View 1 (tube, rainbow, N blue to C red):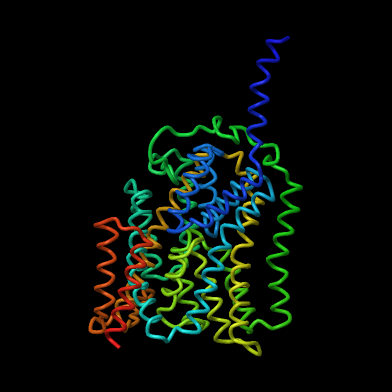
View 2: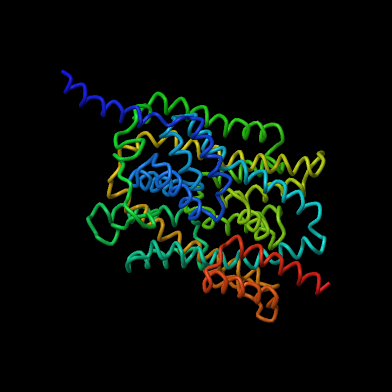
Length: 468
């Protein structure tokens, strides 16, 4: 009897350990991750991996990658959704809410403050120079993203072909990127189901060194926690609440203010973006910039890069740049409100309709996705989508480059082909030289993104003061 009790004791201890992560400690860890989440999704995912897998040993390597693969298949910022997923795994609904909200909150407050400065003092020489320098550096950062993601995703000729086809489709033919991503996902799914080795590519972050933490050795354990097992009743209840929080305010805005009001337009446009933003922030920003500038008139040409510079230099998801778009849109069309009050409400509305759906996708699907670990077809779809995203981001880099380095860009049409063609005589030499310097710093000397952005911002201020 004693022997049986001794054998049962370690099992009981493991069970307590797998569910014994204090909620208060988890909150502190998520706050720490939120405060340090600079550098875009790749840096944020690596940070979460280092803290949650390597340091805290709360979740194993395989489970972390499985969660990441699911988040990469969803619309919206994959790093924030990964935080929601793991927070939910650890502490159910409260854990997911805390992890997701804290991941966004520091960046929201920081960009809101910078937006106030931008709107109030944007014409001041120093501020103009600051954002002039940031634009050049951000262009180099986007190019780096092409190489970083491409190096991980384009491991064979099929993946290279998918990436090239995605670039041609969006750059030359303006095919909507959701259709491109959907097509890539279907191709990857079918290819993986057929057994083709070209689609068997691992995705996500890999441990930089040392032994990999197995799921069974983590605090969470290998088995699915009781609260994380599929529960259709719970999923439907929480999803219904989140769906109401997302859509009811939107319907009230349209009903009370009309569809042509700036707040209705912001709510409807960014709700649409929340549904189709596959592939992360870089993949969607070109479309957002074009719509915000050309269709709605919320931004002036080039201001999207200013907003992206804010997002790159503050913690949180890069998609937070849309908060700046909503801020400026309401600031320039405040109706009967004070301009800054309207702008603040526009920023809050944009953030709300962008991120509430992220909680919906996770809470609705995660309990069922947990049962699909080791699913080959799902991994194949994710691999093909990641390859297509490389082509979409390359399109973004070219679009940013045209509008950063040239003062004039002409539109050339030939049948279904529509091209933005730079007027070579309008090359902005200071922007070109600063972008070149940023690229050398990042690619040749491996300087950090934050250091490069700050150095270029200071150089931009210095140039603007000299030119003035």
